[in-house]
Image (cartoon, rainbow, N blue to C red; front, side):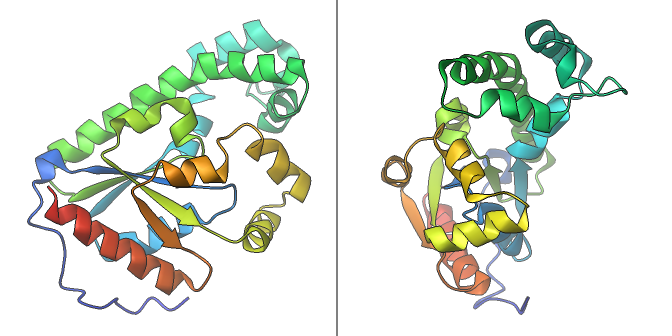
Length: 223
């Protein structure tokens, strides 16, 4: 990957008040490359990135969450080390039947408040540190979960379907898995309509990254 500095690399958004650093939510379809673009931009700006999907993985290791999951879904979703088997749990919640829907909603009731609490904690910590000009929230279900309430702006990463298929293939997911997961999210049209900014992610990562840098500069002027 070409990591040469973008145009005007001296622009650092340092004139933003870091104690009130804006939160920008990154939105897109499954496999859109949100995290990749965010990581590229983080090389050139004082950005704190919150990975809500990673937080979601971590909260499944918390004892209160594991207790609630065991009470609701039983011992079959746990391995011999008493850890939640995410693939097994995924098969219970991703599907088109009423049972899948009920299972998904019940799991969200357990984990979403805990994830929201951790997102809020990280935002407060990043702002208090005074080190970051912008906070970026990367979450697959940002709009659907209600976590969007902590965001000041939203960016839609617009990626062609064929490219998204290649991206999920690199994760070992099938097209069917993409469809299953996306069926429980807002449509791409709705996501796009709810975002103030859009990135055309149909070309190189450098091109997409520069678009996001331009958006960060626009945001800086409004704060």
